[in-house]
Length: 359
Image (cartoon, rainbow, N blue to C red; front, top):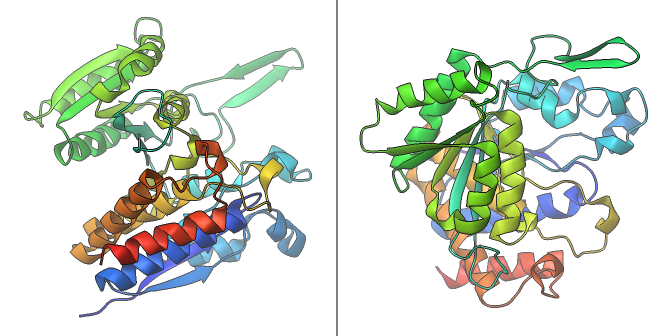
């Protein structure tokens, strides 16, 4: 039976209105090419334009509509430029992640032939716990884990709980079984003995349920050096929120550019594709932004839909998108961040042509 997937489209700010439509075009081309079920794209307001129309960057209608969709694409936002009080509030991405308990932030870093990687053959995934840790904007039920008892004292607390670590550890080990059967736990238990020590220890406990997966662990500071020297040796890296954010930016650069760094945020019921990079307002509207990360994020969403629905057709479409992006970069069609001269639209068109050439 045919099933129409209903996916939200939130273009966001900066380069978002350029790269998110590019991802939609490419996903549609892959869906058609593979005969997968069609997608009903549902545009929704978010960001600065939503402030102008609704008085908030994340209107209630957007959150309510997202709850009934199969998943959604979220473009970058430029909340640092929002007028107050919106600038000081939890940003739209953080609000959505918290509202839907999107506890797993999956961030691959893969070097493509034809792109200038710092460490060739890098092919790893950061699995970032997305709800606790040192990120004060999302580690409490209400309010923030950051406060100032006096004007001269600022305090932040980190929260690590066994249930949260268990579920992100399972996500990491399950992913490793579909890849190269290796998980690396990143922590700072030599100093933060109770908090990241608990993270490390619970991950090792969960490892006992996955005997086929090799496990090791490193301190966060040492891990940055290991990645710069031998990123190609790592497979799945699991860590807490802030460490995961930092490491995924590092590995994006190691693989070639944040412009090729995709991501997806998931719970058991919801999936949100969101590229690692920001809104890049300095290049917005110039047709030079790299849409690859957003395109690959859309592919991750299709793959997640396939697993959740038990439907292999979206996975075939996702694999075709990934292959087409690799073919396009290998052929020398790249945007300026990768040393090329192709614009956003030209790169998108080349990926679509590569999809059709494969079918």
